Length: 423
Image 1 (cartoon, rainbow, N blue to C red):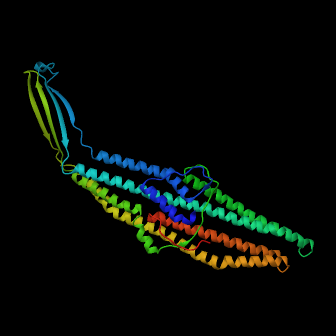
Image 2 (spheres, helix red, strand yellow):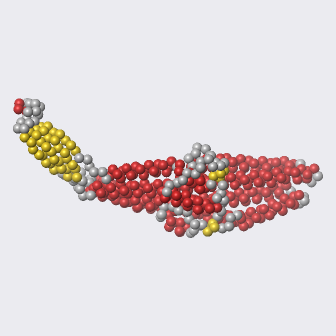
Image 3 (cartoon, one colour):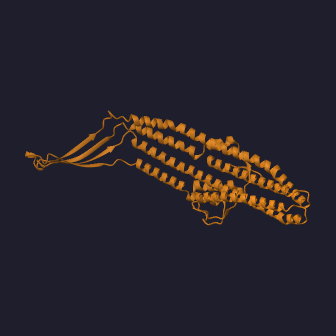
């Protein structure tokens, strides 16, 4: 049940980060938050792409540690010429194998860059997983909120329709005008029109949730849950927790990767040594000899200065990129936090004053209408006030939990709420 939404999201997040998601039944009639999150993690194409990125980085890491291949060469000199060099009688034949040796830790630098690349891809996968959890939770809340609003409007329509027998008796007794019957029908029709608008909203929300779970169309009849509230931690603690977000942790691995790339760029001008050993045969004398070769490139013209400068700037850029990323996360978290705090204040007003007073007034006016002390317009207005207050309550509840889901996606873990009693 959604009254334990934090625990549900925590369980799903932990399962994803540690052991991978478990796929819930795909044809459940009533969908819970836990099932929605599990199915979204199991079918998200964004997570699949992140898995492929991790595989790509792993392949690059393996390739970074590969040794250079040896070279086998065959040479034939002093052949197919003229005079004594006609044909191959005076030919010199050489069969040689050579091997280049990387010096100064170039291979180690490549491996370090590859290891950091794998770490970057793994952390990015976690970040995408948190985004998927947050987006799915918000989509689930949209469906649940739309269902609740339609339910409230259905109850309002039922309340208006219950007035019809009493209204007819009043008209027959001459206590009310026949026009009031039409007024009640208009009021009912307007509420039904609002209900149709919310049904369209519900259909869109259901489709969005279904797509996030990997289905082209909804395979669930409705969603179930309770929207309870609680007191969130301070914004300072939220900001402090943002530093654990994989999007920011990722920059540590990025820094290590770029640092290794800078080291590799600086080492590249240092020459490698190529050693070759071969066997040479002299056809003219039928003699054999061993050929040894050592070659070293001379870094005179290309000292890799451009790549070194590029790697230095890329490394220096990392700190600024992380700070910009952090600022963006703080702004998003601030908006979500302000939204949920505003929703809490709105709920307090609605629950402590607006809804109880509107219900009391509606009950008194409905009772007085039967006694002829109030008009139909006053009854309808009182019922509409109750419905509007309850609709506002549902909207505030949805906004509160959407803010919670957004912040949880940023801090990396669900935060604890001091729970109030369920209403």
